[in-house]
Image (cartoon, rainbow, N blue to C red; front, top):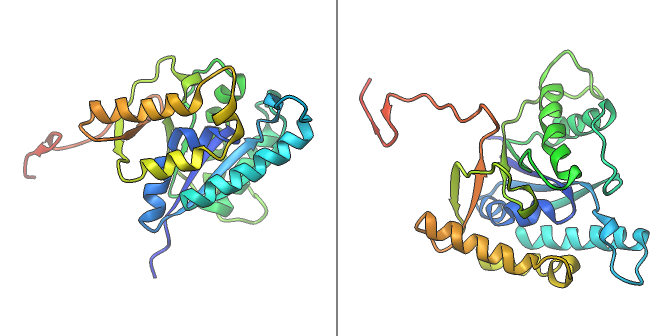
Length: 239
């Protein structure tokens, strides 16, 4: 029996993974893949007026579970603190161990440049965990080594140097994606950024450029956009 494929989308805060690649994730969930949204923190420090940080963390975790359900996946939120992420062996080992358990076929995460320190650290953690999860010399709870490829996706806070390599047609998934996003309080009520409008417009613009109704984009890791072929892509010569 063929092993079921698994897409894991890793975000710094509840909401990041979904806004960046939620429509792509839904597309793969519909195709029979397992889908997991992994949040390193709840993103709790953007709490609404009269709501404590602790209560907002609980709210965001519940919202993340609802959004994941709509998109056909599941949600995992780790207990690291919003705006306090650090790059150290503890979190790398934690994520690497999780990756050996989840066994992703592919991972999607933030781009490396960001105005938010948590966002910038997230892909560094994912890449370091990739190495630790993949090397047999590390004993992580007795779990078998697992190496995963990863891509970056698009977030309004991470746009410095982000140039898409891949445009994924999500025209059939986009309405469900927008429905899912509407379950996050911050997406619908933020006074500092119009999240819903931005990501609806971004999907439209990326669709226009790629000749689809709606699209979401991915980017290869730095140095990873090297593909061997036997000629011009789409016009390879026989071997």
